[in-house]
Structures are given as structure tokens and as C-alpha cells.
Length: 132
Image 1 (spheres, helix red, strand yellow):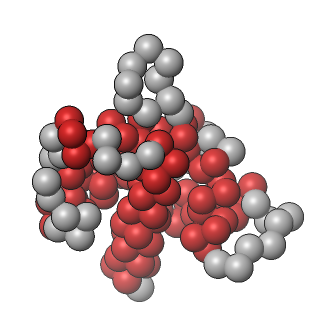
Image 2 (image 1 turned 90 degrees about the horizontal axis):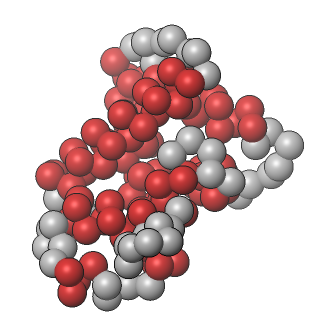
């Protein structure tokens, strides 16, 4: 099993985010050289009427409403033993069957949203630095 801060895991999550965000932007007919910033703006515009203590709370709330790739985090397949969060974590972390079930569904969701937020902010900051 890989650690959540390994380069391999981070890269897998970043690739997942890039693909997922590209789909969201395509669905909304948004073309941009700054996809992370565009996605962040979507989150802000849909959550502008609520107050949050920090951006992580806003990110989490947006995805709990199944916005963006939130369906991947909070959706459970009815015909399988895996929630989607558990499935992605198992793949990203190269967990065995036993390892993938050591956490509850809610812990898997919390970990996935945290890891996605961590890597999203990395990609957003990198994008902003590249475009300065």
C-alpha cells in the first residue's frame, strides 16, 4: 500500500482531477487556458451565498452537492461492495482487498475529498505561477 503523500499517489490524483475538471468545463462549454481557476470560479459562483471558514469547507460542500466530480466521492454503487470513494482510494493507494475495507464509507469519502482538495490547490497554485 502506498502512502497518501507519495509522488505516485499525488500524480494519480492530479490526473484524475485534470480529467474530471476537463469534463465539467466541456459540459459547461468553458474553454480556457486556466482550467483549475475556471473550476474554482464555478465553485465560488455556486457557493457565493454561503459563508465558509475556509476554501476546504467550500470545496467539500460543493462536492457533497454532487457538483463537479462530487458524484465520484459520494456516490455508492448499489450492486457492489465498493463505494466510488473506496474504489478510487484502492486504485490510487494500491490497496489490497483487506486494506481497502479498513475504513468506513464516510472515512473513505473524507479522505478522498481531502486528497482531491490538496492536489487541486497544488494544481491551482501551479497554474497561477505559470501564468504570471
